[in-house]
Amino acid sequence: MTLLQLGFCAASIYSTFLLWGLLQERLTKTPYIAAATLLHPNPQPEFFRSPLFLNAIQASLSALTACIYLLVRSRGTGQGLVQVLGLQALTPSGAARALEAQQLSKIGASGNGNATANGSNGHAKPNGDVAVVKPGWISPLLLRYLAISALQSTASQLGFLSLRYISYPTLTLAKSCKLVPVLIMNVVLYRRKFAPYKYVVVSLVTAGIYLFMAFAPAKAGGKKAKGPESSSLLGLALCLLNLILDGATNSTQDEVFARYGRQTVSAGQMMLVMNALSAVLMGGALVLPLHLIGFGAGGHGSGLGSGSSSGSQLSEALAFISRHPDVVRDMLSYALAGAVGQVAIFETLQRFGSLTLVSITVTRKLFTMLLSVVVYNHQLSALQWVGVAVVFAGIGLEAREKRREGLAKQVLRDEKKALAKDA
Image 1 (cartoon, rainbow, N blue to C red):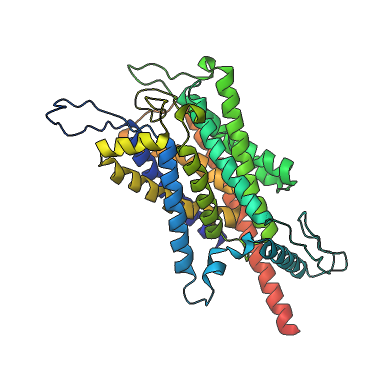
Image 2 (cartoon, helix red, strand yellow):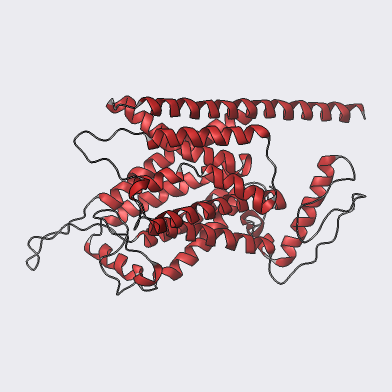
């Protein structure tokens, strides 16, 4: 069952974000041409260059989708709206009760009195008693959500800024190694321990993706894509910070699930609060002058930057929409595809953790390229095929270990049922 759930989550992420990527390319690289008028008989093509506005729309629609998802799943449970949306733990007293409940859950799961609870506000005592968690002035869970939203928004901004100084292939190549910072930040920030096979899987997938992307043959009749040799030190530094913040984001999400438990924080609830906070943060940034928030990576059709730094991204985006109303359809389609994909992402994160999630997301590009090889008969270099083999070796190892873990859990459940009957 565990392997089946993993396969369903992976398939959902691949399918939704394949569509999301196509819509993103349409938004950023398709010129929009206004209708000809007497004053402007020959309108010039324009490109949509307000990524912050697009991300704010994405976050808002994702929060709405998460809300609908939670309400649909809770039908017939008799739970109140606050409980369904997970808002009770965003208060200081609610977070304290959630931490105490998680301590009790860990003690009950261990079956003895030696369990300890991970949490800075309270620990289970050696005799199995639960320490009383005193509420603070602000919910620690709300602070975690704010940190995750700020890290995620800042990481996205740094990624856009790095494209001023490095090529897109260089950024994409660096993103293929995202598993490494996620693993490191989990260990450094939260002292999490992983099974030895996880380190092997991370190494195999990272090495395979790197080989696949670094040794792509140059396009016939075209220029070879710029690589690290043409990248500036500042661009690489921004890219490194982007990866570090991505790792901190994923590891903090893991820590929230581990600390508060699934009874307090579900995947849909985290998706709702994170996107709502991100929408607020990006909404505030939208009204700032463009030169203060650092957009303007330039590049014709890149979708990054703006032709003017005098106004705000909000005014620029609204002006573009007034000239090209059909862009609204593309923006809403893009945001909806991303919102549905996020449901699959957060379910994967809750059930399998950030390492498995990032393994799926970084291999998505590989599977997309393999699909294009089959459909359009593209050619791969020998080292790219080696990279494919290495990635599939890592995926195979992950699948085998997940199957073993699922079987072990089933045996444990059967033993508990047998003991309960004997008692």
